[in-house]
Amino acid sequence: MKNAEPIIRLQNLSKTFVGADGEIKALEGITLDIYEGEIFGIIGMSGAGKSTLVRCINFLERPTQGTVIFNGRDLANLTNKELYKARQQMGMIFQQFNLLMQRTALGNVCFPLEIAGKSKTDAQTRAKELLELVGLADKADAYPAQLSGGQQQRVAIARALATNPKVLLCDEATSALDPSTTRGVLSLLKDINKRLGITIVVITHEMSVIEEICQRVTIIDNGHIAETGSVEEIFTRPKSQAARRLVYPEDKKIDCFIGKRCCRIVFDGSSSFEPIIASMVLEFRHTVNILFADTKNIDGQAFGQIVIQLPEAENTADRMIGYLRSKGLTVEEVDGYV
Amino acid sequence: MFNPVVVTMIVRGLGETLYMTLLSTALAYVLGLPLGVIFVVTEKEGLCPNLYLNKILNVIINLTRSVPFLILLVAVLPFTRWVVGTTIGSNATVVPLVIAAAPFIARLVESSLKEVDIGVIEAAQSMGANPKEIICKVMLPEALPSLIVGCAIAVTTILSYSAMAGFVGGGGLGTIAINYGYHRYQKDIMFVTVALLVIVVQVLQEIGMKLAAICDKRK
Image 1 (spheres, rainbow over the protein chains, first blue to last red):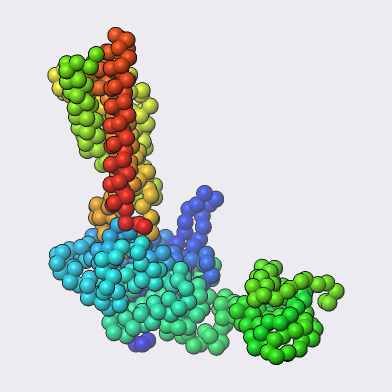
Image 2: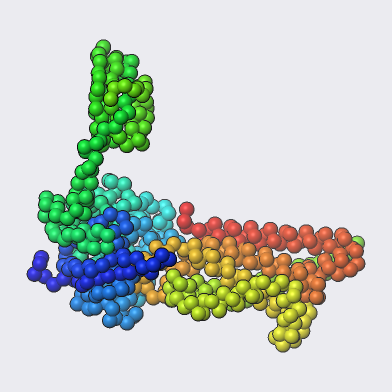
């Protein structure tokens, strides 16, 4: 892939906002090449500047310094008209989908085609094809408000693809979706990349998204590039501090994980076949420490008590107690065990 | 009391009131809608920022809005005579009504347009839409339900202004209420005209709300 011509080339890009309390440097010295046909990830914590970066790629934000070269042309040298044309070559999808609420799904997909000067019938034919592609052919006449989040994002993807763009920019496209819908949308993006050969730039704060679909990734930290490389490389050998933070987000917590709060769980005849403590640990993804246990299994019913030490995070501890209570167990907090 | 002559007069007054109100609203929108749109797009974070123009429009809108309608009505009499050739009757009232309502409508349009999700506008920009397309194909259609609600507010406000014009012989139900109720102490006729005004306001408001609900695809 390296020998191909980069479709997007960012050179020494900086963006400074002038706010109420002086200048804010959102981006500084960003140099990046994104190649045709790849799925490229840009990851960073919130506030790192990744949304500004993606807006610089299609000049929704004009960079303060540096150049953006798209498909061999410096965007800064284009007239407004040429810039509008260039943007038609770059589809974009958003965290909040940003569909036109007063238009149907079909109307939304027709929108960029109308902008590109297609006739109404041509636009509708093409829009129907695209809704088919994203698996929403039956929802053509539905308004966005009648669709689920995942379906709305699919409409947005269809809309972004309508003008046959060379690049698809995804700004936190899955951040408002639940995990299973996220997987659906990501596999759709992957499929589109394979079938249409479109370059996809994925902006996210979730490492799992990068892991799922990207080939290369750059890590943005505090307006700077911390590290760029193949996803594999960054996952196995993160060099920068920012990369390590993203790859092992729970790094620090593991040591001082367990808190001082303990509680006694009384089993008085619930089913002993249900692994309650284990399910709780899996559900909350936090461990508990069993300090004392004395239970008996009598005819498939559990009797006795267990004392556990709860995680340090207050609300996790509270939610765990709530969880145990919801399973019909008597739970009381006890002191003096730790 | 309610002989055929009075009834005919009230019916004609109702007709004049509706004529003044609807015509003024339509003409005021011809001025106020573009004014509101230009005001919103020339703002600092707008589509085509132009702070200079924005400031001027802001001052004009505020100035016109701060003049009480009855004063404005009198102040523009020479202009009214120049436009319609007379200063009494319903046609003459339309002129000050339009002048008073246009900036008010511009404000209503402004607040409706500002309700449009900035993200949707950004999405349209990302698809290469130019400012004109964004105004006509995104901002106005997306704000439609809110614009209709604003229109209902404008119509009812203009209706009450038109009744005020009764003091200077503006025609319509307002003139009847003032001539008979105020000058001649015929309270019954005044009550009937006021009741009619209330009903007209209710009906117009209701129509506006229904229309807005039908157009609103957000739920």
